Length: 103
Image (cartoon, rainbow, N blue to C red):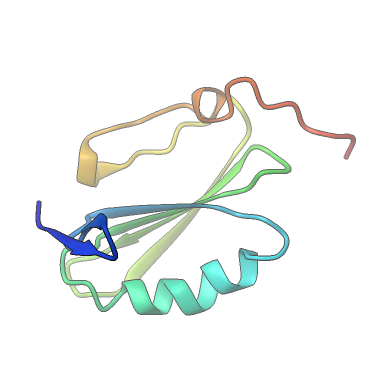
């Protein structure tokens, strides 16, 4: 891991995974602007966008040819497989203690 001190904070400069918790005010920016910028990071291979109003995760993974594969994972019993860190949590674990409002 490579860290650089930016304004007194150590920042990781070679992430393999980036996770964003979506909010109504940031969702579009996270899906578009940020994702496009992150793709310029050579080490970056997986991106998780986690909804806060339902059990839904959008998982992007970089293929060997550089294209991105999108997988939508929905429901508390579903599992998201994060190869970059060898992890496969159930959405139930990601959303532990989260109560969703009425649909």
